[in-house]
Length: 278
Image 1: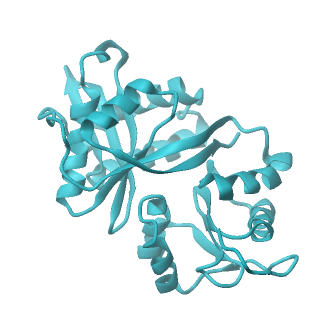
Image 2: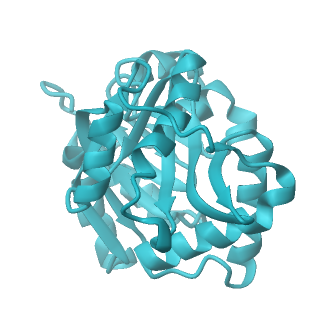
């Protein structure tokens, strides 16, 4: 967070046009800003906007499927929150470093709250070398014809973890399109047994420098067999082999996941707050 500045009491928020300046800011923290970097590198394809209250290197916020404050003083974070409240966009998540995301949520919560789910102080993990553990050779990229099997596994994961049904109404159609896009891009990975997914993971977003692994899941009947670490290692191997940093978020309370990431060779590089909006 910037110090020694005195912005106006009600700073004006504008959409960033200087994406080169944004890229310089994001390069300072390529792991945490991975989702935003995809927009800066491909503004037409990624969707969303980047906001500032003046200088990009001092105040910056991503507005897309998620709302992600990146830099700013408290009064600027309040202005970002106010702009989000005035807009028509519906956000799924508010996330970011605790010192940025929490003040924004305090401004947003009276209108948007209560949150459906809050993960406070969530470790951010990263690895920039080949994995320390063996790779599961049965984990591979999902084919387009396997969309329904992958969708079923992902829906089960979301229901169990967040208590949300992704197949409901229009949200279900959008969710299916998103999965189809990820599979077509070669960013969904799975191990299949008898046509069913027993391990899955996907690269939710990626930039030129980093790729965010999301949706790591093992079928309940296959848990305890050591699938998570070698399966995740297969995805890491592909990411690092392409010259990117592999990164991910994990809940403090999820001891098995933390142990699996440790086996792969991830190290903690920061923390974020993730708030699933109702």
